[in-house]
Amino acid sequence: MHKMERPRESPDTSSQPKRFRQKVIELAARWYVFWFLNVYGVGKILGGQFYRRGRLPEDVAKMPLGEANAFDLAWTFMGYSFAYILFIGLAEVVGAWLLLWERTKLFGVAVLLPVMLNIVVFDLIFLDAHGATASATIYTLLLFLILLYNRESVVQAIRALMPQVQPKQMPLKQKAKTAIVALVLMGVLFAFDQMLVNFFGHGRG
Image 1 (cartoon, rainbow, N blue to C red):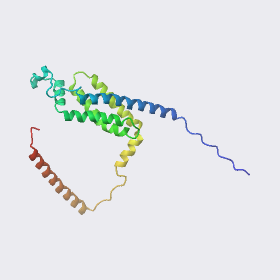
Image 2: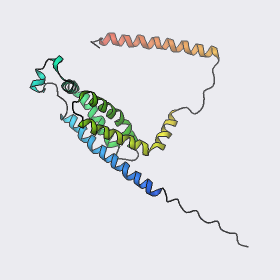
Image 3: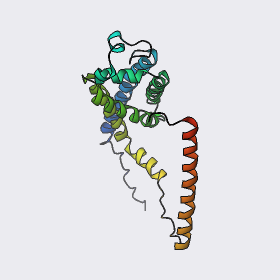
Image 4: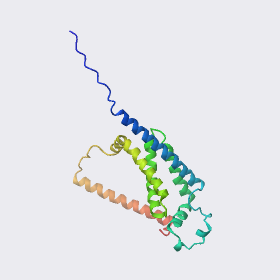
């Protein structure tokens, strides 16, 4: 007597259009952010943004500090140090390039999100017109969208960083000893911290 064969389960195709749609949207988001943050990052490095030291507009250079508006103050401050401009510009460029590949896209988001959140807050506070703020907000939301579409990988990464097993309870005597050693180390770190402060100078901060 022949055994009855179980019918083969057909692959679930109901979610395929949704996955394809998400892939297309995510790819468009990654390419969009890649293109514009490259433009902004390279523009910063090449001098397309901020008032550079020694190259201030004449009206800004002659303006008393107390009379300067928020935009002129911010643009002069940001342009004072080329090293800072280079840091921000390279962060945008490197993060943008990391978005291009599947294996590095989440690293790109991790690099760009703090930079973009800082830019959005900066623009909201200091800019007198908010067209650039709107663009920066769009780039930031697209980065969050990439995280949303890759939430399973993000959750796995967070779980990997968090302890899964509860540590064993220490006896009270050992807890007290640990706390005392930690306080002593805090004192050593504070002494070292203040030594460096005194060595390099307090400045005006």
